[in-house]
Image (cartoon, rainbow over all chains, first blue to last red; front, side):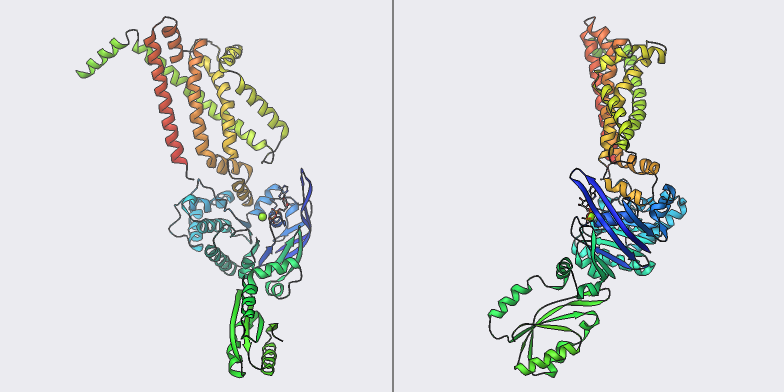
Length: 341
Length: 230
Ligand SMILES: Nc1ncnc2c1ncn2[C@@H]1O[C@H](COP(=O)(O)OP(=O)(O)O)[C@@H](O)[C@H]1O
Ligand SMILES: [Mg+2]
């Protein structure tokens, strides 16, 4: 659906040349939710703006839905943009227009007749769950509602691709989740390809199928979300993965517990994919002569299955613990002894 | 009965005021200000859009056009109005064909006020969040659609409050336009009031100007508040 080849964007600033996007190759498939993560200044916004030519590339090619975006005439580009929706961190709604009028705006741009516009706007308002708020002005809405208007507006002309530039970064965690659910919903219902950029790993974890990690204008790592979570290669990726897999005070808490005696072994179990649902702990307690103490854990759902770590304390004689380790490994859950022999 | 008493008191208070002349002068002031305001609005919006659109980083970035427009706007905005009127006398002769009556003041009023308003238009447009313009582009809007569906509507409250300020400036400009015999309250206050030492005429003319200004401000504020949905 989208393919980028050798894409470069250089800005000339007073402080010299800034290469915001540096020879990027990327292919995004139809119907997938593709996440791009990176710290501030990595070049994510520039990259996503290159997709609909809000920035013109310094060199390289952008092909979206079969169109080579750099080769279009102005008129063709405007038509191509009507097939690429975009939502923004700060929503960018027209405050002088009501919710309905905001959603109708892209339809007006396209020249859709009034009666049809009305009908489509009502559909969209229901789709994003804003029934009854059509006559409100943006200033009367909460952040989450504003983003829903943004989404409805972006979907008005039935785009093939939806670009999201930090679409949830201005929202609180609960609202973020509801907006992310809406995006997944839309992706499934409409088969829409979604490209989203963020600096928050939990956003990637929650809804993306594949992820690319960006640093200094380059993509340093990419792949299916679970694979990247399982085997992060780059230091940068490891940091991001930590955001969602390790409970914040894990080390602190465990150190504390090591101090207190009575805990023989501390194991870290890492679940990847479908294994988290198995009653593993229950089986261990029933099968082996050990006591198990759950110390800390964080299991997250991703689009391709659960992922996370669980820290358990195991008491029992050495041989029995050894059997437990083997048993766990048999179940394809990776396990590491982080305390005890 | 009471109303005739009231008018009697009025006549006593202002012995020299010819109310019919005062009415005509008020009408001329309003007429001049109003016509000038319409043209100022048109030229001001146009110049303000040019300034905004050709500025660095905007839709039609163009150093040359921006430079020339900004130069003229600054020049005409800096010339004191009274001097502008005098400078424009030959020009006015050609355009209006007469140097008497309210129309004589129009070119000077418009040329004096339009650049003033243009700057306010430019500022109003600059206040619009760049993100909104960007969002419109991302939806495939043409430049004309961006101007008429985004820039002007989004800036409307600021455009109206700027117009209110400009209208008030115009009312005071018309008073000075009396110098070239353009009529109006300023003219009356100067010729009948000041030169003939009839203070009551000056006083009444001033009060009427003040009332006009207050009413303009009131209407302007009402419209601005009604439009402002932020
Ligand atoms: N219009 C611009 N002019 C100059 N430099 C820019 C411009 N836009 C972005 N940059 C620079 O490009 C780099 C990447 O920016 P950006 O794409 O916004 O990163 P991110 O979205 O990942 O935070 C930054 O160093 C930024 O300063
Ligand atoms: Mg950004």
